[in-house]
Length: 393
Image (cartoon, rainbow, N blue to C red; front, top):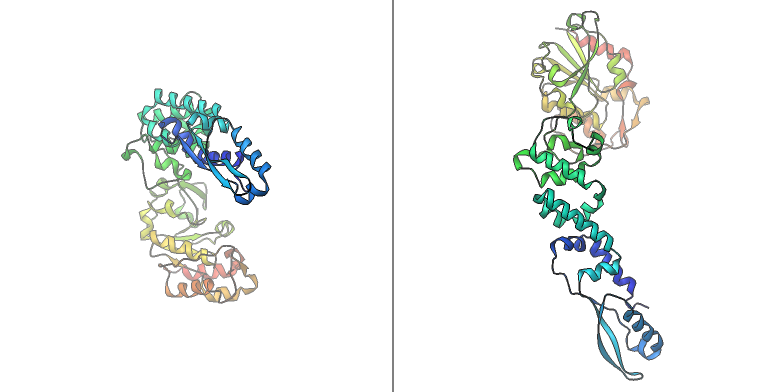
């Protein structure tokens, strides 16, 4: 039987609720009502052969509270004239809420509305389009309003989240509610207080003018004469990007490697240091303008991501030269080939012709599907030989 049931009516109203149409209507009092719901009704054959079931269906619909039935008369050649419901009409929003059993939730939404209207009336328009979102955060709504009001008074505060000092609010609370706070902030702050180039919870701090965790650079001094630590000839140092940018090391040799073991064991070399690259994170080097006057060498895995990292590095330091990332090295260590789980599919525009050849070969599976050679599989003696060759003037 495909005739409309009370469950069908309820499912239709549930969809309107979940799409926020009914919750928003609580605030806007939008004239959705009366709401007509056409019925799937018994056909002529049903009336002829299943009249008791048809009458039971009619009685069931008549028993549904908070609705009005609009009927019409059907003339059946066997059973005669039969009056059947054709449309259900829900006359008011209150009737719809009663049918759904959402009266308590509706009262909670209106309480949130009243609180918002009292404390942050500038959020009225947002709330009228996001009533269900607000209800999902009902337990913490007062604290969210407190934070939003504070941001309105302190746009782009230039402090760490840890420094926000408000009753009942701590760093974890802010971190756990970045998504809803972002919604509230964007509908509160002036355009100049929101950095639209940042988005998403991962960039929340940058978007709204909070201080972010400093970018850091880790490097080893390969020449004792360059060591800034008197008691250590070859220190392993980590500096924030701003401090690294002030180092007086213009004109030295810079080696950048991706693997930490290779970084730690990199051979000592006159007038040189080695930087631990650790992937696509070259923002930490942007401010170090003295690197432009250095000889820069990059060593990564021979795979598509290795060349992807090199390509990105050259956006900052276009004179970077790669080493041990050529086809001869790749073929020499074929017994150590491995597979790359998620290869780079895009084109790279900053590779040299020889680099482009092997990158394209890896992308096109010329040597085999998704192959790679990780840099730590290359013998240390081969690394030492290349470094010795680069040790000239």
